[in-house]
Structures are given as structure tokens and as C-alpha cells.
Image 1 (cartoon, one colour):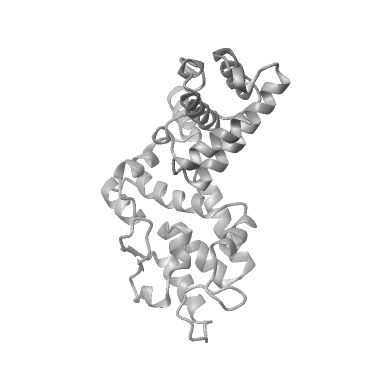
Image 2 (tube, helix red, strand yellow; image 1 turned 180 degrees about the vertical axis):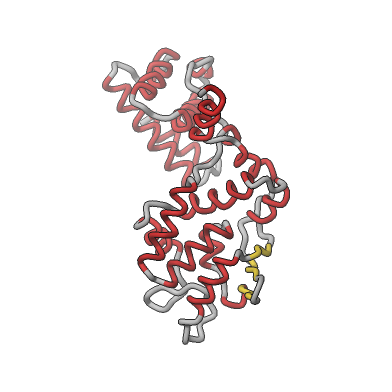
Length: 274
């Protein structure tokens, strides 16, 4: 089959297993669509590709997904030496990541989250959520924390991230509420484990466990990290300072958080014209 030969060619070119698997899935879906709509994978036309892209848009596929599918079809066009079948195909362009602010919690959502977790009175979960919201850690950084990475004084404190995504450690100051809840949690620890946060099985907590815990409150680690960065930006802090606290190697990533969200744009209009 034509698709099998294409996949073998991509494997021979050293494409990753994930890429090859994605290509196979995309091409099989395309072949199925062609069979239903009178097309033929062995005799493709530009009309086939344009019609397929249009059908994906009509089915509600987002621009990023369609862009990945089109990229695969473009690779296939090069493989068959029929570049014309993907020439000037009309499609909705995916919005650049830097054009929108990452999803974060609004002020009321953030307060509701903190209120809800405190009501449940699980000191470990309270400390985890306060640390994520007020320190902006990636969940992988949080689970890697040891007790020795936490320093708490009467009026100050900090935590050291030693296993960052970019490979560089950083020190994040601890706000008063974080110090309070971490201290309460640590006071309950009578074991000798070096890990800061332990699971119910008394082992270092896992990313999956934290994700599951947060899902009970209707949120996830990324949203809490985004909330941290967005709050710092909205408070008027220098971008380079925020980037360092968040562990962003590129300040342009941090600049995304200065983009207004939909509610802020609506509020701006209401303020100006009401």
C-alpha cells in the first residue's frame, strides 16, 4: 500500500517513532476520507487536498491541528514528487503562541481555589497549591523538591529549584502565606524522607498524583503557573525579573503574559464607553 511505503521511507530517514506514528494516523484518516469521497491515494490532485482541508475546517478542527495535518501531506507530496498537490492550499493559519496570553485563573477563581483547598484541611495539598500559585513552579520542579531546598525564617524564606526545564537552578522567594502553610505541613512530618511532598503511600509524590488532586478543584498545574506569572506581570514587575522567577530562558515567552485576556478587553471597552 502506498501509505506503508511512505511510512517505511520516513523510518529509513530517521524520523522519530512519535513522528512516524503521527504520520501513519494522519495518512490513514486521509485515505479513509478519499475512499468515501471518490479520491485515490495513488492519483492525488490538488483538488483532493483542498477539499480535505476544507472538510476538516467544517468539522471544527482547530487551525493548529489542520496545520499539522497539512505538514504531513506536504511531506507526502515531496515523497511522491508531486509538489503541486499542496501548492497554495487555502487554510486557516494557526494563531502564533505569542499573540495570546496563556490561560490563567482570574482573581475570583484563584481565591475560590485557595478557599476550597483550605476547607478540605489537607495540609499537604494546601501547601502544594499555595506553592504552585505563589511560586509558579512547573509540576516536575515541584515533585523534585527536597526538604533541604526550603529555607524559612521568621520574616522571609525561599525555595531552590534545582531541576529546572532549562537545566539551570533558580531561587524563588516565599510569600508569607506559602511560608505559613509549608511550616504547618512540615510540622506534621515525623519521617526521615528527604522529599518535600510525599504521597499517601509515603513515597515522593508523582506528577500524576498532583494532577489528579488538582483536577478535583477543576484546575491543573499549568494554569497555576500561568496565574503566578500573569499576576507578577499585571503588578508592574520588570519582565526580566518575572522571567527569572519563572525560569523562562527567553523573555519573549514571558511577554506573552502581558497580553490582555478577553475579560480585560471587555472591561476596557466598558470603561471607555459606558
